[in-house]
Length: 300
Ligand code: CP
Ligand code: NVA
Image (cartoon, rainbow, N blue to C red; front, top):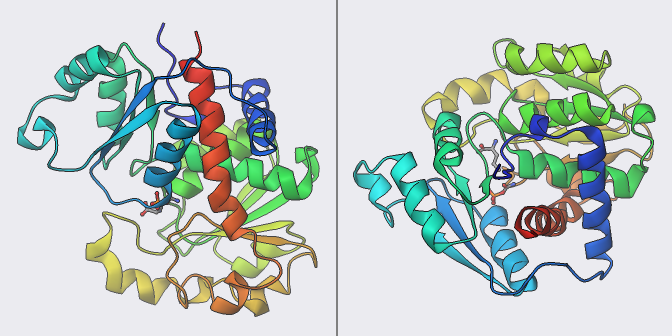
């Protein structure tokens, strides 16, 4: 069966901890173990800085290459099916990474592909971000996940869903604070709460950050939500990660943001550039954790 990386829930804790350990080894200079010359096709129907550049650089570090295929580069834009696209690309490349709107499209692409498919973000999930995030948490707080408390402040979006999945699998405590109506998806939450009883949701950010080791936030308006921009800005005002909120967490709490950030909205400059910020370590770790994923998917 073809291996894919579509959803953290497709993996157990042991495999994901293995990927985190490997990512840290690769970051520390260990050499990857795959044959040179592998090619990754990267389909993007939404913009990207980190995912695009980190996957491209990871492929170059693996002595392979990556093809950037933007919105209009493929016949997908004229209605060719995900299935036919997958069957064709499988004849040319060794793996496909896709960032798009519909999660269903990614599942359809993977179902028809005979090479590994990687989910580079959908409206539902961002598993590569989730893995890189756990790597960052591990570097700063260690592997004793049961004793780590994470607060996610803001929108119950794709990034939030993936951190919920990570909490369910790795076992860290997680409290999500979202405005009413913007809580994470029940379907994701319920399943992970069965695995980890320390996953909670509140509408009060100060409750969430109490005793937190990690404060995580993301934009209030994700790609595809632009029509709701005005309404969201009104509702999310109380959910800014600023120094007043940070003071309510543990003294050595780290602040995380998947980026890109809207400075002055969900996070202040002071916090983003302050001593507690692990935000650019987190951005860097996308590279190392994806290198570990690519090595795992591409080795025989
Ligand atoms: N965090 C993240 O996925 O960033 P990009 O949108 O720049 O890829
Ligand atoms: N939630 C954001 C994440 C960007 C990496 C979005 O989907 O736009």
